[in-house]
Image 1 (cartoon, rainbow, N blue to C red):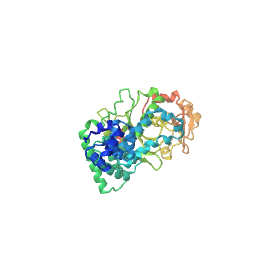
Image 2: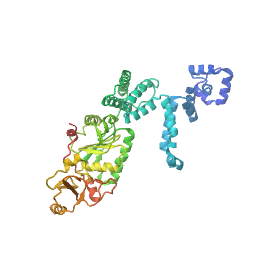
Image 3: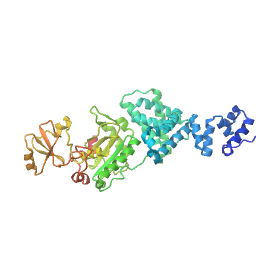
Image 4: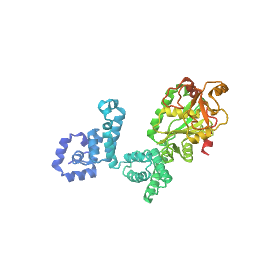
Length: 451
């Protein structure tokens, strides 16, 4: 019998071919010939040869063959089914608008999750890398290092797999850094695999240099910018959310866009190893590591850390948003109102709610009536509000900034502001601070901040 090619066989009616083959060859003979020369494709597929089933999908484009191969444990088929279901969910608006799905959204993604679990069970490198990303974001360094061990082994079985070198390199470096920072002792076998994978990625970078990230994050900065904000986030998911957050910020303040400029959002997984929630719940990051990331991320001579207009926004996993001089730290789940409040601090606006005692020790220890930024006046308790209104020639309203200290704080804007409540509407007076931004003169530049 003349042996036909895989494509030729796929185009012949499967039932006829299977019947003809079954008269000539036994199951073991079909399997033998298929594995040796890829012949008897349909017959091999009918006998459950997963590679043959996957080849039928490649030859015909029939996704039922792809699903069957995936269910029988073909790693690439399972990964392809996951990617197809993921794209369908993201691109089909009817899925999100279906009332049945809206009432139970977990059902919507169950099939996608099932395909992902199958791809993970068969150790497909794509699924392994996605799980590594989850382990890094959740700061599980022990399991992440074990995952790298598995990935490095499995890549040898998938020589044609198109690796995202940028992502895998960042995840590998972050895992090393996270284990070091938390003093986790990794097995020698894990360390060797990590070094081997880094060597592989270094060679890939050399071979595919054009594929590595060369984004100019400073492209958005121009001569009209009064505030230039570098934006760094800890994951791809956080990048998408932060891009939306910045768009919402500018929707609230459309006239601020020309002067309050945000860079392209830079994804830096190392933030997962550098940032954590402090004992008092604030998001905090190691300055030395952040400086290294800023230096690594910037492209071209247009960014200078000593530029007094340059600021940094860091979005990481968990912790209460706060600003420290030229740097804002935000939780990935914070909204545009939180960003508005923190940017207000850059623009010399101070909190109108009660400060923590450590902050009050700095701002609420005045012996004479004193202006605090653009929005407050702080005075010893002995001064009446009438006296202060006469001295500053404007109406004043008490706020809780210095509550419990020997000082009382007052604001001169009568309406509620985002420096006290995050959900209030911006008044024209408040908008003006953002439309014509003037930076806090007591904040240092980034170069000084990192020293």
